[in-house]
Length: 155
Image 1 (cartoon, one colour):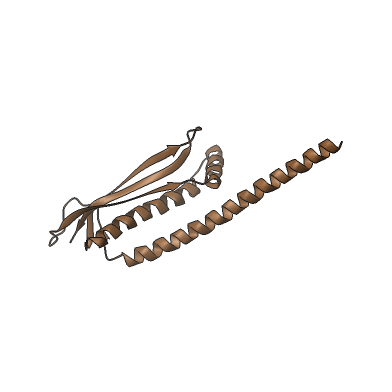
Image 2 (cartoon, rainbow, N blue to C red):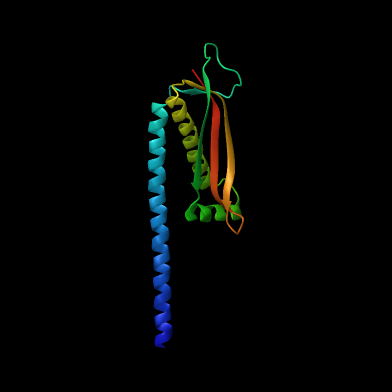
């Protein structure tokens, strides 16, 4: 009888630890994501003078050019994986992945703009974005995503 009761307590402790760590991961992840979005907004405002376009020719008056790029690799946390798995069962937009890809895309473009700023450029022409899955785990679900932004910086 004592062994059954002890086993029950151990199971309850294990469940409590799991739920505590899961909740901690959720709240820390949301905090860090909100902080990253805030940082992205500040940096985008500071670099707003560097314009971008996807046209293949240089605007009139711009004759100095240099290739610029920025990339970022973002890992997907377990909470987002669980939400995506649930959404996969019921269907619909996976909002947790959408915010992840948005953050990665904005970060890659900002890194490219920062490189253009280092060269003293004011416009990025022929802006392109490439995405890739960097790591997949054994169940073939997405592990990390890379976004690579590149273009021709002009002055």
